[in-house]
Length: 334
Ligand SMILES: [Zn+2]
Image (cartoon, rainbow, N blue to C red):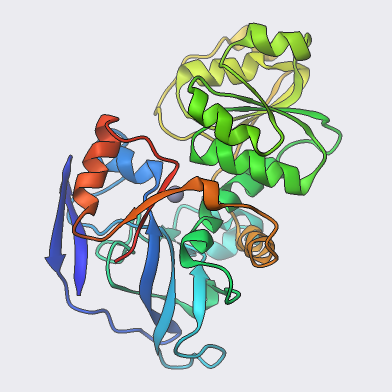
């Protein structure tokens, strides 16, 4: 089968790999659509250190079942499915089901599973990780379950009594946060983003969109918001997110890029601000979001910026990495 192997910084190679065979409890999928995630691009450049040479990337995907492993009885060849991309490890019993994505022993399909990734024609995945797609849900729409579920998980960390919410960053996750927030609760949502086209895209969700400038935000929220979510992952936006909340407010730390940052410590302690980490999503978050996608609760087409085949993907990665191309979500159709 055709697959893309990551050889090291700025090197993606289209190659032939043996077609995988499903083990007991697994199914073999024909990958129909796999999104290029920001984390893939930062791994591709070597910047984040979160991708390993020799591996196949691709962790946001949907496809069609082509083969059943031994013991799989509740699925059929031809079923259209989305995939929860975290596979629990041997330490899973030490964690609550809602925390499985943070267990050190877990594997993330297409992130740290070697040659098992979805920038390939086929992938084998545990049948327990599958969710059925309605016939009217496109594969490209379905793969957006991943950033949407990441967003849903983060928004569940916002305190129940919060009324005002600031999202910092209008990238894929920021856009998904704004969309999921609207479905979840009647928050007064503000989204801070320096680029005008991303602000425009977020404005369609009903969020108030502002440049990344706290003076602008202060015109609406002079004392800050009840909660904020940082969706970039660098020092400057983390500080903006911290300053966007009122005393006693909650900052959900979601962006995941810088390894280390310096924060104004006294602004946390003196104002009793709360910082809460958020990472990935749990199986139940996944099922909630797939249910909402199947119900048509989101208009996701504005987030799909384009598509390409496996052969075109290395060029697309390079364009995304160098900023030659701006996109919310590019879909690879292997
Ligand atoms: Zn992702």
